[in-house]
Length: 230
Image 1 (tube, rainbow, N blue to C red):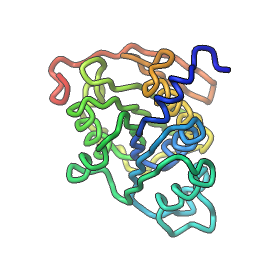
Image 2 (image 1 turned 180 degrees about the vertical axis):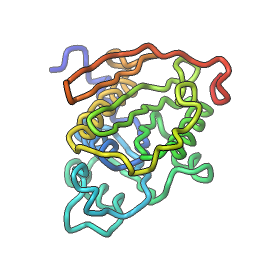
Image 3 (image 1 turned 45 degrees about the vertical axis):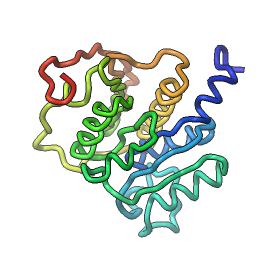
């Protein structure tokens, strides 16, 4: 019933694989909506056990799973929702040693880890392998999202060549609904990229602040001298 979205588009989605690097507030929400949309396979990469402090944004988790591996509960939740989707899990951080394995057979990657180190590793590998990557992050009531299409759009390093020395992993405030909203946007962009439906963000970044519900798109440009994609 969705105008312009044909059976062919649905078949493309069914034949697709997405890596979700980070099954938290962003990646967990994106995974849920990709599963119910009918994606064929997802790869989850997320190191660590569930904690009580995670629970304000973890829609794939359950309270009685606190202290256990998040990716194991994530696959259980996805299978309960859509048993036909294939899920492969890695209880690992994204690293230079495993990124090639994580991206094997993948058509798009969702960058949702809470640190720049893992995001940069994934960005570099996706550029080298010509795999589109959806980059998004949030802080408190704010967030951003943009797509990295190798050889076409800026990469993560073009826009953020240096890390913020004051930035601390998991040291930022989170309202779960903001994470969920951004995760939904990641799923929408992933579906568009995987099926060639609609108009994905190209050389534009969507930024928003939900304190006053301000949304805007900003043009972004490739850095010709970027050490990753220049």
